[in-house]
Length: 284
Ligand code: NAI
Ligand code: 15L
Image (spheres, rainbow, N blue to C red):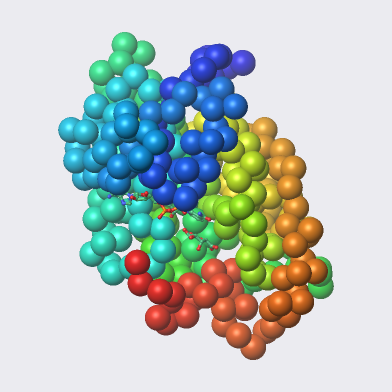
C-alpha cells in the first residue's frame, strides 16, 4: 500500500445529494463497504435527522461538512437538463464551492492532505458522441473521447471534470470523475441496456474510487458489465472495480416493448439518448 493510500477500517465519507435517488441507494449500500456516511443535501431527509441540510453555495456549512472526512462522494446537483441559471448555481458554482472547502480542509490538516473527491459526472458530458455499433465491430468508447455535452447539464459535468483536473494539478486534490450511465434499480429502455449501472455495481465502483491508491484525477465510466456495453471500463477496473451485473436479463422484455435502437432517431444515434433533443427532456 502506498503512503497516500486511505486509512484502513471505516472511512468517514461526506455524501452530498444524500436525499436524492442515487444518494438514497448509496445510503443503503455503502455502509457494507466499510464507510460511515455524513449526509448533506439542501432537502431534509425524513429518516436521517442528523443530515446537514444546506445548499452547496453555503460555504460555511460546506467547510464544516468536510471537516475530518476521508473522502467526499459528490452527488448533489441538478440531475437533468434545466435553465442555465439553475445549472450555474448548483452544478457549477456549487461544485466549485465544494472544491474550495476541500482545499481549505487540506490547508488545516497537519499533513496538508485533502480528502479525496468522487465526482458524479455523467454520460451527458459526452452525450453527442455517436453510439458505437459494437455488434458490427466498433470499438468501445475510451475515456479520452473528446467531450461533447448534450445539454447545459452535460456542460456542467464537463466543467466539473475540468475543475477536478485543475484542483489536482494545482492543489493536489485527488478526484475520480465517474461518468455515470443510468444508475437505477432496473434499466427501463433499450439505450439503458448499454449504459446501466446497477445500484450494487454503483456501490462497488464508488467504493473502489474512494479507496484505490494514488488516483490523481482519473476519469472512469460508470456502467455494469453489460453485454451491450458502449464504454471502455479499463480505467474503472484499474481502480479495483469488478462489476457483477449485466442488463441482458431485461433485454427480451425491453426489446419487445420498444424495439431495437435505430439509426433514424437522433435520440438513438447518440449516447446521450433523449438529452440530445431540443427541448432535451422535461424541465427540472
Ligand atoms: P437527484 O436529482 O435524485 O438527486 C440530487 C440531489 O442533489 C437532490 O436530493 C437535491 O436536493 C440535491 N441538490 C441539488 N442541488 C443542490 C444544492 N445546490 N445544494 C445541495 N443539494 C443539492 O439525482 P440522482 O439521480 O440521485 O443523481 C445524483 C448525482 O449523480 C447527480 O449529480 C447526477 O447528475 C449524477 N448522475 C446520476 C445518474 C443516475 O443515473 N442517477 C447518471 C449520471 C449522473
Ligand atoms: C443522467 O445524467 C441523469 O442524472 C439520470 O437521471 C439519467 O437520465 C441518466 O443520466 C441517463 O442518461 O439515463
